[in-house]
Length: 380
Image (tube, rainbow, N blue to C red; front, side, top):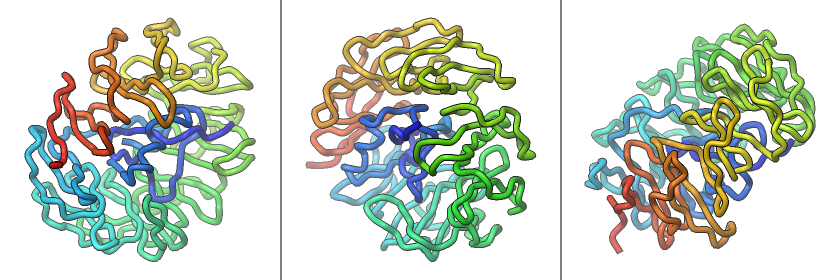
């Protein structure tokens, strides 16, 4: 198993989390995906990360992060600037609050632009289920949100610590639980900070449909080990047996054994036969990508075949596609019929969210609508 890159959550994706923690290898995006190239633009855009396992937890979107002359602000869906360019970084709003970087520290603003939680954190993540994980002591390592050293804890929407600084790393809450790291091992806590599963896993990831994905043996973000699934009490539902595993979406999850991938149900029964490929994605809007070269439906049949380009997951009925190589690619969009609706022309392209997509044109971050019309671009 080997990590193959980050994801584009469409949000920031949380594209890069504070510790650059990534999901089990090969489950979403290949190494040359746009999720990695975003770093070259010194840009961390709040879907993601993004993290390569988690299905983006998207909310109705009214404000969009925008950048001009190296500073970030927010616009509305029409392209009107609503919050001025005051921040070194700005992320999508979650649960009413947007994370921003100002004067080298992270804080949170509301949708009027008021600083609700003053900048004071060296590391921070978006709010999820009313809490956000933050770090004060660690040293921030630009240009990405990596934090070296220090402890992590959780704050509420008033900025009060509800779970003290005590973890070496701390992820977002999903389905009432969060993965935390202590002494190089991962476990899970609940929203009271009580331990559900003590640190024992080499890797542990967000819960999806009641199951958490964990790895035993091998190296962190490296080869070796086996992946399995646990319930919310920490009991194994599916013992560690897979060489890779993705999260459940609609009761189906991708798993790898040897050189083949398959899709299983929650009981471990194979529902889509083994596929000889390098990687297989989770299902998104009813389709899953195989090696970036074609999509299958939930019966395992080919739904869309991509002959001249690679594609990302579908979002709002559109999927980003790319042609060419890492350094000379062009990106556009297809619909669920496999038809090109926005021709490949951009240096990079992200998923649609709230009717708009962020793309890179001439080293500038701009927004387009589903017809390809430019809604916003920075002034020259």
